Image (cartoon, rainbow, N blue to C red; front, side):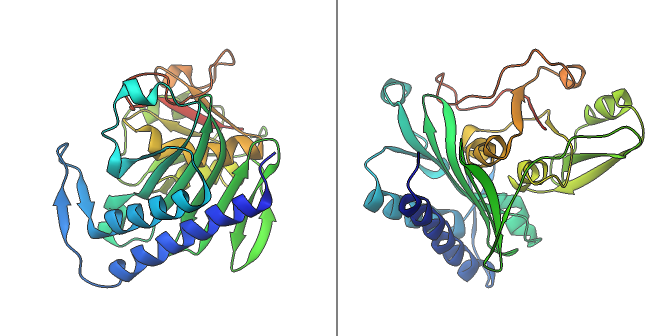
Length: 262
């Protein structure tokens, strides 16, 4: 069982990183380019440094962050428990200034996300999940328990889509569902959190993501009672014989396609 003081420490670290991000968000900022051509801002680096410093004070576990991902598989393969961090998920949303970006901190044990905090600093919303202990959302200091919502016959399916990465394959899934469908657009790891809190029924991801993009939010989903499972394409989305998405199992940090569901 995870102790409350550690949980609160990680929440506090995510909020502090969010403050660093907002200091830059509210002003002009410089955009850099990573080797994979994706954008990187001063805010990513400020949040990364803040989180690494904070985690190092409360834990001896190693840290894998998007901004310090050049750790060899030889070293990572020896880890059984580690912190998985995306200091600013949704950099494109940050650049567009639509507010849909998050700070993500997950604790991974034997490939399983057992604890995660997702903080959206513009929205002032914090999602927390502890496997075996439940999940909740904090808004304006108010803590609310969350859980996914199963689709019922006659109800409109709410399917989470990406605001920045619309995929034509999503239509194949929509066509396979019974009844009306509604696409709910959202950026960053908030897409998984919508399913965790019952605001949407499904989130199919049929495009590239990395492990730090999903670890914290998956912890929230699974702690809330939902699932994050591997799929090959849209036709797999309603299968029942599925495997859960797991972490640090291979050299590559790229995720397979996955589905978030109740």
